[in-house]
Amino acid sequence: MQFKTIQGVEVPEIGLGTNRLIGREGENAIKLALNLGYRHIDTAQSYKNEREVGEAMKRSHVDREEIFLTTKIWHTHLEKENVLKVAENSLRELDTPYVDLLLIHWPNPDVDIEKTLEAFLSLRDQGKALNIGVANFPLKMLKELNEELAAPIFCNQVEYHPFLSQFDLLDYTAEHDLLFTAYSPLAQAKVMEEPLLKELGEKYGKSPSQITLRWLIEQEQVVAIPKASSEEHLRKNIDVYDFALEDDDFYAIDDLDKSTRLIDPDFAPEWDN
Image 1 (cartoon, rainbow, N blue to C red):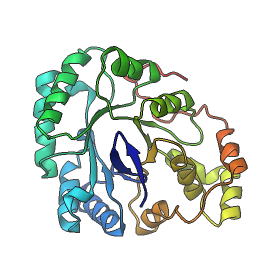
Image 2: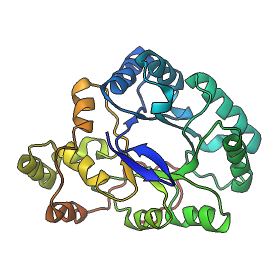
Image 3: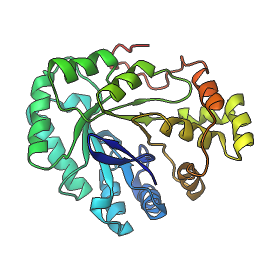
Image 4: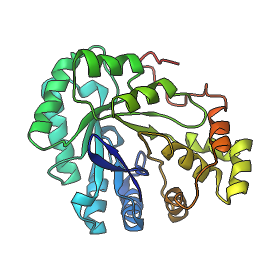
């Protein structure tokens, strides 16, 4: 596993997205991932699987300090007192004294973001969240947090794959040394049907998903958290370190149509693109 160093913190480039990994089956998949070498696990209060993540970490016998663990607080729980209560519950469910990264899962315009940040900073000061950040924040909102409120943001986690442009957001995160975590990096398996990615897969002896993950982690600041549960897919997703994309191939993926957004709930913010 290789790392991106953000604000002096090492973050494994390929993590495991755990949405819908629930129950004993989910717990076993997370444990298997850790035993295969994954050291970056992403969960959320809304996934209702923090207990499974905690159990998997314990059963894997991987030292807690080796794991970069992220959880997120849902947009309806961002009132200051609620944040503190929900975060404590997450730590109990995860059976850990701290998370490496705590995120606002989605922005909520009806809540005073400064009060939310006060709660996040309190958790950071207590050592319960080593880093804080946001998810699903478009560039305008991220700038407001980072510049107008001078919030010590570490990360923005957003949908990012070969069919969705996030180039302005990428430029900004590089400029300000922020982590850019790509969720749904395989576009819910749509990358497997893309002719260019299949062609490149044949060229490099890799699958379209491996080509995609390689394209993502070759970008500054970017780490990716594909979801997988089978041993085959878990192994494939971290088997991306024995090749590098030639420049022309990298830019050919850049040039794919980038207008497909897959995650767009009715409470989503106004996107930049």
